Image (cartoon, rainbow, N blue to C red; front, side, top):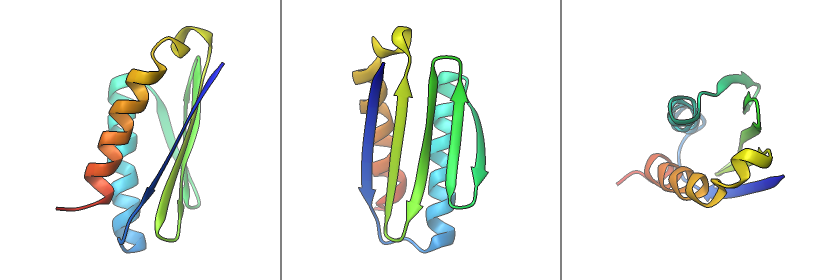
Length: 93
């Protein structure tokens, strides 16, 4: 099992941060066929072989993804894609 952890600092309002998190979730859902749902300020997602959460904590977004054996082979690719998406949505130009 492999684990990915990404923390992205931001200066967004709570509403903007939630919208940014939703964009990350939509990307994950589209790319990896994940089911996503909000639980307070935490966005949980899962599918067979993948589970994780994106939590909004003040001025930072913390993402944790656990990959099963098969998906572990793609860990570096998944991490790079998700980190780039988080940078784009949480740090507006």
